[in-house]
Image (cartoon, rainbow, N blue to C red; front, side, top):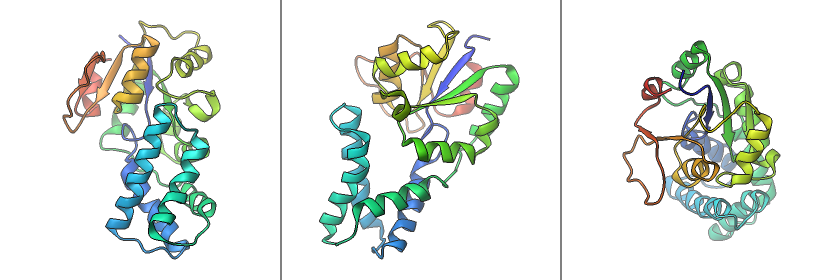
Length: 227
């Protein structure tokens, strides 16, 4: 066994987040009588992405992002709705959206059988991620989840990974692997923490200069040959 500890990102690495998000958004729109078209969802998506990018850069808090996205979205549509209620109902629906990506379950079951210790590392909203994990097949496969909201720091900061390492004193730079789809949070975070990393890159996106990518895979099945 090359890597005893496997630190997996959740959304877009194990879970199909776009599917969960679009269905949760649709449910929220229905509750609050907001038109739901592909164009309207794209508007929300662009606002949401812009704000989460600011969070990743350390320019905004998670609390600000999750509320402000609906403030801006409703303003753009010219609708008078309660942004806090919209956000609350969206997050509640999102917490029920458990859609594993192809081969994620079978790969994780095989890794568990082999004796790897697996953990989730995520910047997601804690209540949502706890709900999704508890309602998924991964609940029995992963030993724990480290959520930025509870850690007091977020990926890609060194402080976040220092928190993880304090919880897992047996984890070292030699026996752990960070696995994720995001160059800006997962791979940059691994680099900041001095940990080896595996970039899940199904779209074949180009690498970013200045980042150390130890492994690159197009699908999770390839991970079995690495660890």
